[in-house]
Amino acid sequence: MTAELDAIDRRILAALVRDARQPVAEIARHVGLSKTPVAQRIRRLEDGGFITGYRAELSPARLGLTHVAFVEVRLSDTRESALRKFNVAVRAIPEIEECHMIAGGFDYLLKVRSHDIADYRRVMGERISALPYVNATSTYVAMETVFEAGNKTADMI
Image 1: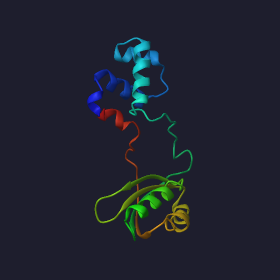
Image 2: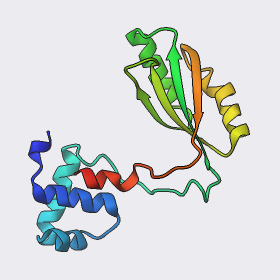
Image 3: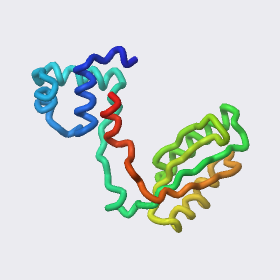
Image 4: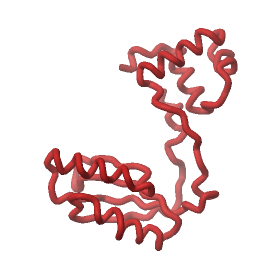
C-alpha cells in the first residue's frame, strides 16, 4: 500500500500531520510544486484512504482531563460475535480514547482519560465493567505523559 506513495506524497502527508490548517500554497512551497498539483495529490490521498480526516488537537490539561489510565481487559468469551459486541459497546464510552485488541495474556488494552481518580472509578464501575463479556480488568495509572502520538506519525512517513 505504501508503495503507492512517492517522496512528494510523503512530504505532503508529513506537512499535513504537522499542521493540517496550513494553506495548500504553503505545502506547495514546502514540496516544490505549484498549488494545483498539490491540491490534486491531497484529494487523491484522501480518496485513496491515506488521509482519513482532519481534527483539532485539544489540550487535556486545559480541559481538566489530566488522569490517564491504561486498562487491561480480559473477556469471558472471545468468539467473533462476543468480540463484535464488545467492539461496538466500547466505542460508546467517551472517556476511552483508545482501544486495542491484544495478542497475549489479556484481550484488550484501553486508554482512559478522566478528570481524576474518583472520575476514573466512576467510569470503571459504571461503564467499563458493564461492557459485554468483561470478565476481569487491571488498571495502570500513568504518572506522567512523556509524549503522545499526535505529530509523531509525521516522523514515520
